[in-house]
Length: 477
Image 1 (cartoon, rainbow, N blue to C red):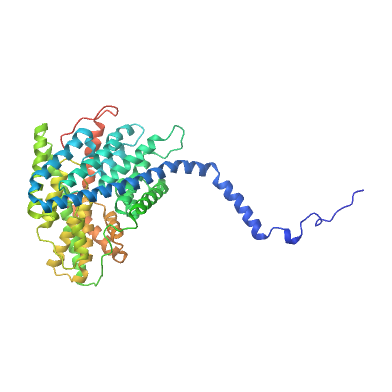
Image 2 (image 1 turned 90 degrees about the vertical axis):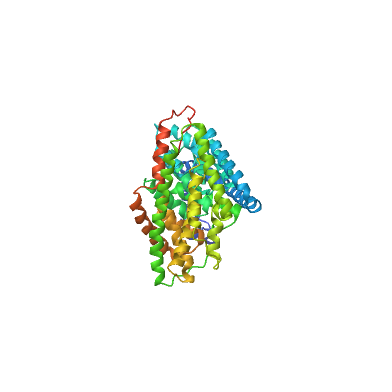
């Protein structure tokens, strides 16, 4: 008869038994292992991997574009200082070459790039998604960069932020289309929305601005459906740009205080005035572009472009470096040199320069240049109503937000962008207030934004083309 053993005879000695802590860790390891290797997590990783690759490529492309853009702007400053008379030759020539690149190789590369992305998002349906290729192919992205750099070399008044968004969306679209059959994919629309956010974040080093831009400008879809894709894309693109350029701020750390009293009058005044001015500027661009369509022959269109270049060359010759380029040096002088005051006419000069550059039909954005016009107007208004010198920078920042809001009608995006460019969190409420007042004032001029008007045009052009045939050449913007 077998001998019964006590329950404790086969158990290890107490000193060899796993502790409560070890048993908990073992249980957690098993659950984490099952979670990490679950079908849901595998699918999420496979869905996200192409977006991560596209975000990395976007960061690299944005940095490369920024460095070429800086080189082009500095080169234009150098030849204009050394030989001002060359403006009457080089500027028209640059306008013509930049326009020809767009006209002959990729008509959808003209202008800012943001309306094209908005139109492509709307076309990203099972029926029409092939038509988005006319707006966001890699060919369009390459021509976008080349045309804008040539225009800037010749003294154009343009920025790279809108173009970077279009280039980024083109990269995301290309990666999305390269995925093999059977690969778990996110929708084409989400790919383009995410690309737009990553592009803006990498261009300005403003991750929150990229996220807000998506919600406010690119889509009306509930962000819950694609928030993970947008957040991770913004982080990866932004970190890539930071890794190559360092943790920079687009505008640095201006000294900003809020003393109260008179400065509130200044905030309200510049918000309304700059909001109205931004809306009028957008309206003027739409009118000029509509008028330009009257020039239907190749010779007439070339004459228009050369005329724009010649007028821009005249401004460059008589005003100098402040009339050309992105305007970032002007903003930096206003914010960091307390003795610097812009001439009263410079805002009008930059306004005209932006209109001439954009209406030439070449590639180039209006984000950075709008900020420069707003800063000049803010400087003038602050001096006109005798705002104390200690509050001067605050008025300049609010004016930048307000003019950009008047053009693009995205007050929260404008406020967050300026906030992240300067790291001045103490005045976030003043920036938001300025954006909202500017939005209200701009709505009196036109209830729709500049980009919405242009998006409608690009949608019409895209729908008028067969998705598999070569695009015809438009006559206007």
